[in-house]
Every structure is written in C-alpha cells, then in structure tokens.
Length: 295
Image (cartoon, rainbow, N blue to C red):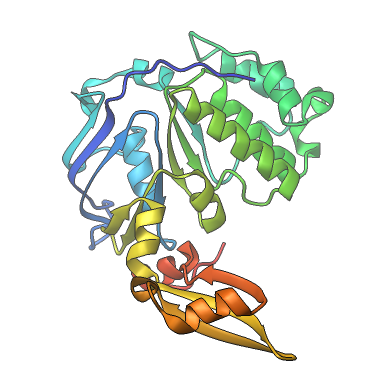
C-alpha cells in the first residue's frame, strides 16, 4: 500500500526556546528547548519518563497552550492555525483510546467523519491483520490489536505529519515489523514523523535524527550514526584461531595501516569474528541521560 504525501523539502516544525510549566507545578517541565523537524524525516524525541517528551508532543499538536517561546508549523505561528490544523496531522497515543462498546469498523467510521480527505481504511485493516475482526467490539480486542487499530486511526486522513508514541510497544515481532515497514513507506513518500519510544532498535532502524531530552532540556541532537561515532570506541575486535585456542585482540581503528600483528592475523590465521567496537543507542541513552532505559 502506498500512501502519497505532498513533497516539498522544507521545515515542518520549528521550535525555538520553548518553555512550559503546568499551572499547579512549581518547576518547569520544558526548559528552553529548540529544534526543527524537516519534511520527509523521522525525528526521534527520546529520553526517560517524565523529562518532557509527551508535553512537547502535546504542545505541537495543540493540546497544550500558554507556553513561552516560538513554535512554527510550515513557517507560520502554530497559534495562528485553527481546526484546519488537525486535517494535516495523525496522532497515535501510547495508550490507545477507543470506543470499547463499538466495533473496530464503527470506531473507524466515527473518526473518518472528522476529516475532509480519507484513505481506504479497509486496506489499512487488511495490512495490519484486523480486517476479519472489523465487526468485533473493541472490548474483545487484545492489547496488540488495539495498538494496531490505533495506528490505523492515525493514518485515516493521510496526514502530512505523524506523531507516534510507542507505536510498536507490546506487539509481537511480526506485527511490529508490519508497522515499521508502513512507517518507512510513509516517510519514503514524503511523510514526516515525530517518534517517541523507549525501543532503541526501532529508533536505530527508523530515525533520520534523534534528540535526547534530560530534565526538560535537549542534551544531544544528531543522526544515530553520528551519535554512535561520537560516543563509541574507535576500535576493532578480532577473534582468531591460534593453534587450538581462540584468541581475541583489539586494534585502534586510527592506526591499522601497517600494523604487523594485524597483517599477520589476516594473512596467516583463521579469523572467527571481526567487528568494530560500535556503541548501541541503548548505551548512548544511558550515557547521555544517566538513566537505565526501561520500556
């Protein structure tokens, strides 16, 4: 299934020195963050629970107001948009909210009435393995089925930008793969995604750029590859057969040229494994935020 989205190549959202405090709180939840979301990219907003990710997302989808700083959507102040703004966006909340006494089809029909433009929802239901259950009440759905139905709902209006919060959480590998493939297809056809998740494998696979939030501030923002290079060790580990034993050695990537021991191993030994000492996004998450990553 191809979901076509208008292409252009500009900045979808610009956030400049955004600050926000909930009325009953003494401390600010958002403490002067700035970033851009480019058209046609998947932008990951990452960090431990309670650092302001969801609050930032709620501001961008106009659920929270009274913030300080500037937020622009397609080069216009976000506050200048009325209800027409919601025709452009699709939202998948972390905790799916459905009308449990209605069927999946009735849920979909209700939300389709809110939009001017609608996609073929049956095709979406089929892709996500829900078509045969579309006349079943959502109260009878499993958690995974509700998550998949939530994703269908986010795509109903063929949005220009998707806000996805833990879109694959609680799914088995097969259905998680289907959703990730659909997110990639959406992006490849010009769609833009703001993704929040604790699943770093999803981030590594999907995101063009990521921002790590700590205590209401952005501490790092870059591509996953650049972050790995920055925080990883520039070394290569080699395991090889040495007589009847397995020997492991490590070499500095910046000094490989002419290394006699390395050349001897390559030319005269049977190499079992060879890989660079690349860090993972989970490691970076812990290092940057100082918090263990828990789903």
